[in-house]
Length: 364
Ligand code: M6R
Image (cartoon, rainbow, N blue to C red; front, top):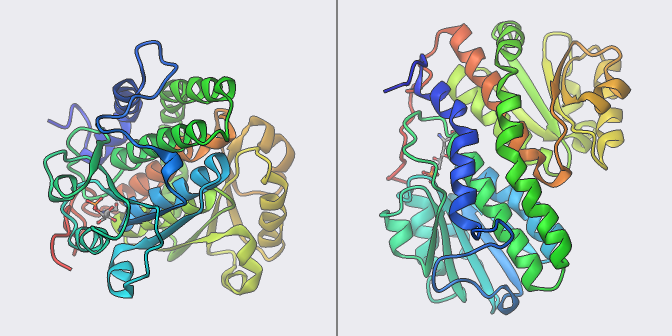
């Protein structure tokens, strides 16, 4: 049932090219050039804002999607974790699209937040893996992520499929609102269709990430850094590592480092930097150099171009395939997951069933 893998988590990480291709083919028209949403569809011109609510990894998918909706569709997006949102009882402006993201569709706090928004938001949309779940049932429209059953407590393929569906929604919103031409929309869809191939190449780094992770297993603390869309991924990388390896980890926006966390840097604290060669690359690298100047040990995850410019003095490098800027978080999820996985295996923890955790958190 683990298809030759030692753990469900390893199997589910390896399945990502296949399930993302499946999610894409579910939502793309036969010629691949259009997005087809299930009935009754969505009219993005009817909304002035989006509110996205979820827990844990699903929340980090929302955080990433905020960048997409804001950058490509120019819709303001508010995000919150469900446990805060539900008791904050925020006022809801008219013409709000509320989006709830949940693998299980049964997370108690997310469901309570959805019920709070019912009758207040113009539309309740959910993005779920389990199509017959409570959250799906109580939504105006439920979009399946098509990841297949996820057994490992650590969410992996559900995260990348959530991102894929949210990316499609952002592109659809951009097209409908006239923020993107039909031509560039077609280019973006072609980029998304190229992702499964890129993910397969990233999975080839498995052995190298295993070797790197053996050193991480000795650490007490690990920091993850990223900027822009790589910031939510830094948060996700840190969550994944602490959840299954029990190593204390924190994700920070690279630019926030000098406002406090840089005090944590010493030669014992590895710093993992997600930095594809994108428009923010130079900014991230200058933050990374501040870390190295204070004796920090940097593991730089970038592409060939980025590494050619910035690998001097770093402790380890991971060479990722080049990827269109917008969709880098989906590709860079692979090293984030594999680093957590191999570190946990090196430490001998129960990877699929980490202590104190349940797959589905149905109590608050
Ligand atoms: O089923 P959900 O997506 O609503 O679950 C949300 C979180 O409990 C979940 O993502 C959790 O953070 C994972 N164990 C992280 O790997």
